[in-house]
Image (tube, rainbow, N blue to C red; front, side):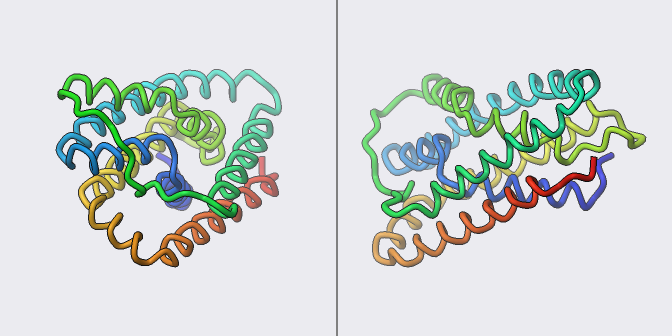
Length: 211
């Protein structure tokens, strides 16, 4: 089992990343505003399947990589830190756009909604980097639990957080969009908070030389 402190830290990283606007959030919010929350939830189910596919691939790859390649941890740590810095800049840079700005999408049936959600998740680079670069930072190779078991546990936590938060966003997309339209400072505050948190996590990862 993963150490509780590592599990909590990974949960906070996952929460920060899911709250940072990306392809998944943009698509789900747009779908919810254009076709309603029910349609967006179908697409979210497809995204959840995509996350499971990424997790399975990452678990197999991480297990082999950490066991066989010297300094693999450091390479992944640095790559993950730079990606977090990139996300922090996207949140803090001037002229950033709100994911709750209305975007036109065609009305699709349920099979297509599910397929679009799955495709959006599989083509989202943030998901791949999260699993391949960030997951190993919270794994303890020398513990009594195997690398594979720890990877699955951490990945399950990320999937639950991602699906849960996105479901809440989908259900409240209309209200959130209306509030942000009349209170642009709230949007700036959210972006500033997320950018600061992600930047701090990136610096912590870059300075981590424990292993």
